[in-house]
Image (cartoon, rainbow, N blue to C red; front, top):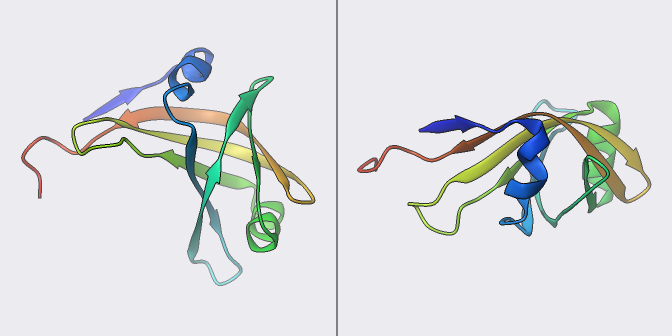
Amino acid sequence: MSIAVPLDQLEERLAHFPWGYLITVGDDGRAQSLAVPTRFADGVLVATIGRSAAGNAAARPNVTMVFPGVSGNELSLIVDGDARVDADRIEVTPTWAVLHRPPLGSP
């Protein structure tokens, strides 16, 4: 089940998710994930990241953030965006967002 989230409602939705996974792509083409506390300020997601994630996002700024639901019955929030890196700080400008969960009864 997926529910599109209008970007003008994203800040309200993010209030329920204090942390998420930043997904970047490494030089080898593999996805890399990093759990990060995240805040929403001035229309962008802001987090502190390490060197690998910073290098990946600087080289390939299309990133995804996944904010998992606490239980299998809760929706997760998935946000695609464009990243800007400054040292150990990343700012992700959202381009698309969706609330998602697997259908009930799925393995």
